[in-house]
Image (cartoon, rainbow, N blue to C red):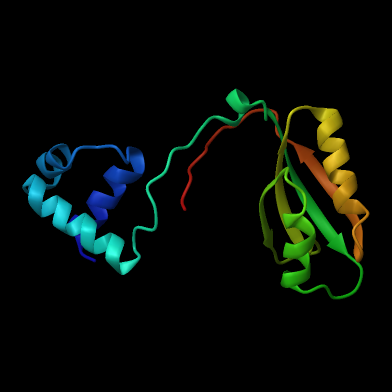
Length: 145
């Protein structure tokens, strides 16, 4: 991947529906040259998908929280994945360093539905407790697949 590929990816991340001709005008290539590069980046797995991002509030999921998950003893990432994948309100989860075992991003319709989802996580085997922070407003929201 060279600097031109990087610029093409940057432009596609801003708008995956950009025309190859428009991208080419920015990076100094023809539309067909941009298409060949994009096709290669897809074939190599550098570009994994073209997608649509929908505002969660329009789908009725306007309440969100970040939750620290603390476990009893040692719990494998596979077990944490199994526990968290069973809760539809979990939109992201990852193991972390520090005192918590995992950090979980949850979205729900409202506070009562968030509370129910948190309870489903809390009653899972090996989960000791959680610490939650409800998001009041989004300040920066960069996404990367």
